[in-house]
Image 1 (tube, rainbow, N blue to C red):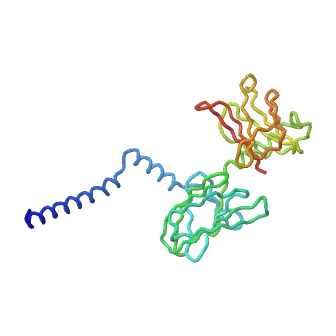
Image 2 (cartoon, rainbow, N blue to C red):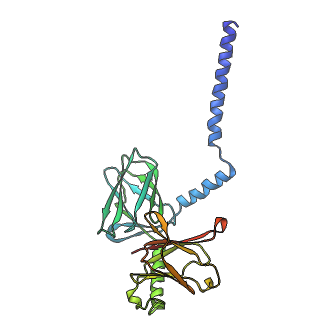
Image 3 (spheres, helix red, strand yellow):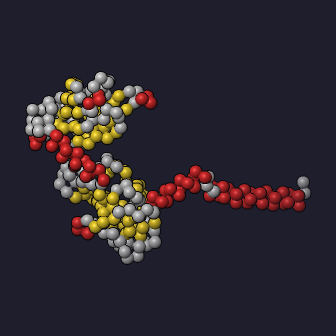
Length: 276
């Protein structure tokens, strides 16, 4: 093979390589119909006009879950994102960890402390996203930096708060002396939340300080009752309990427990947590 032929082949390979390189990004940037629909729906949620109100002490309050909150920060200033008291942060993930700094802080007395995330951008004109996972929920937040405008304090209102408190009040009104306890309603603790989906999902849970009472729908009669496991040390442990009609009496003042019925695709599970 002479030099001219070799140079010609080399040049041809270079052209083919350049063409392949130009095609690859184009394919990577093209979206399928489902991908286009998904990004469009996500954009509508991110850009939605959610409820924003002013809370005490100048706090900007977003309704949790309604849309993706957009929090505006500024260089040389700090944005204080305050989470719900008692909420434990698991992870904080930021898209741009180089130009955005996030530092934790706390407020309040031990046992009811609130976690604060102090956010600081390095320069204006930045946009990134942040995900906060906690013991109660997951926050999806957009961060923007502005030359001089910023939100000093940010917090959230939670739609479940009102319904949970109303359920607690109704439970107190319904039981002057709750079934099986022999204790007046004012001496009982109704601060339990029940999450999950099942036909037998408990209608209320309360404790007299020594035992826990789990009341099921009346339709549970004649059906196989779920099995109770108390969560302790990260493991499911069996404790003594007995079932009478629609009431499960647990010989334990539970903090967290799970009720399970069925196996495989028929499995149903409900989680019980004491909130205070």
